[in-house]
Every structure is written in structure tokens, then in C-alpha cells.
Amino acid sequence: MIGLTRRTGEHCRLDPDHIERVEAGADTVVITTDGSSYCVRESLDQVIGRIVEDRAGVIAACYVLDRGEDADPLGHGSAVPPQAHAPAPVVPIRLR
Image 1 (cartoon, one colour):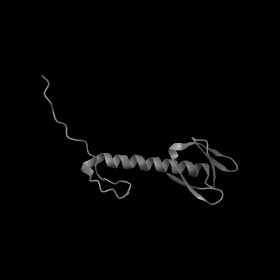
Image 2 (cartoon, rainbow, N blue to C red):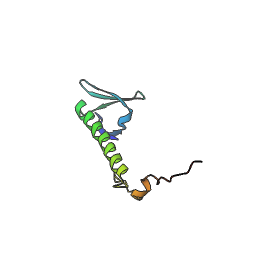
Image 3 (cartoon, rainbow, N blue to C red):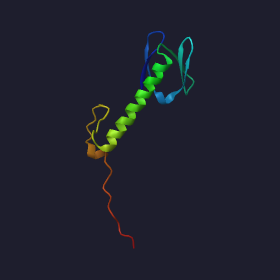
Image 4 (cartoon, rainbow, N blue to C red):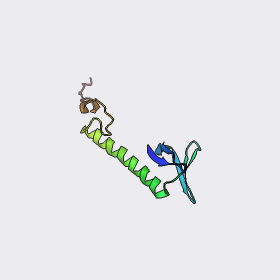
């Protein structure tokens, strides 16, 4: 989720996967896939930067998780040990 500020000063968070487009004119307008539009204080470049940061963070967390280095790469307090995320060992079978 990315944090944005509406023109009214209200803070909102949007899922970047649901952003269809961002229009820059006198105001920056974020339009989501369901047709909702949000007039925000951030510039077009700031909105795009936040989307890029969010996606980069998700990719980095997946990379760390895939390597088994950290069971909770985003710091959400998960108590699942790294080995629980590892694939099960491969057991060879005999074909007749």
C-alpha cells in the first residue's frame, strides 16, 4: 500500500496494483481499476516513485524469503521459522 494525501488533507492508502492510471494537470488524479478517482497533493513523479518503492520492497522481501534468510522480511511479527517456508526434501521413487 502506498500513502497519499488528498487535497483536503486527509491521508489515504491505495493498493498500487489497483491503480489504472495517474493524470497530472492542475491537480494530480489517481484513477483505480474500479473507476474511483483520488485528487492528491503529491506530484505525478512522487506517486510513481512510491509505486516503484512499494514494488521493489515486495520483490526484495520475496527474494529474502526465498533464500530462507528471514521468516518475517517485512517485520510483521510472524513466528514462522525460516525452515517452514523451505520446500520439502525430494524423495526418489522407484518406477517398475
